[in-house]
Image (cartoon, rainbow, N blue to C red; front, side, top):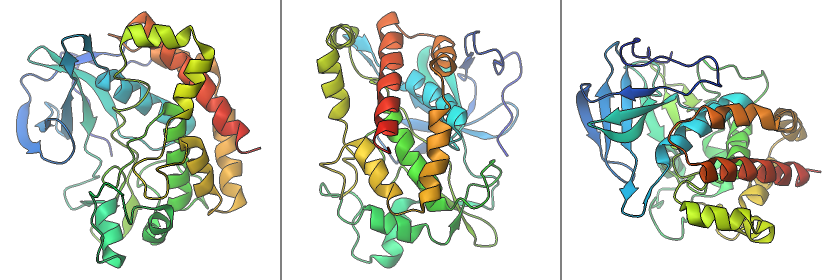
Length: 313
């Protein structure tokens, strides 16, 4: 179950996507612990109505405000749109600094979070998770590690889809939103009280959608269709041992080749049913984005969707 959202005094969920998503003030939320994994400073906070939320700061550089927060929020909403289980994300400010909060993925205190590195190490004793070569973090080991896992708990998932079938969907999602950051700590399982494993929802999507580009560069690429297409094509599954020279689109379809044909049939129907106006409402509802950033994200989603669908024909 997802933790309750703050009450009206701290923000509310927007049901009409044409209204801006709220910016929740989390300045007074109690700090539970500082997260040591990952880049940057992330802090676990306790919400006023209960529940744990991971607070992530957005980097503000001298020449630009980066977009980790809006990239996380848009990606979470896009995941829901296409049927990818994703972490719940809300935009937030803490002491005036922009960021976002991501709900704890564990259904309860008795559940244990285990990253992909833990799973792979169980049958690859020599596995070292943070090598430059990503040795051991490959599709074969991912598929093997997920054989005993079930789909995410509490999420609507069609019967018959395995955890690896869903992971294939995560990789298609990465290709759509231009996510090159699916490293071995960025996919996980949840171990329940009985010991059963459940694939965790997809999470940590802040490095997507061209979040760190300047508006000058976005505008330049939008005016150069060939350059824009080349930039998209350079997106690689670089956090996988067998994906460093492979495009995100081709890597996702390589994973699908390891799954039953029905897996692609399912995801093709899900991605193929998306309309531009569906994601446009999400982007429009996201505050603190520049006009070039909105246009860039729209174009990125259009072209990447076409690429991943065409690759499956």
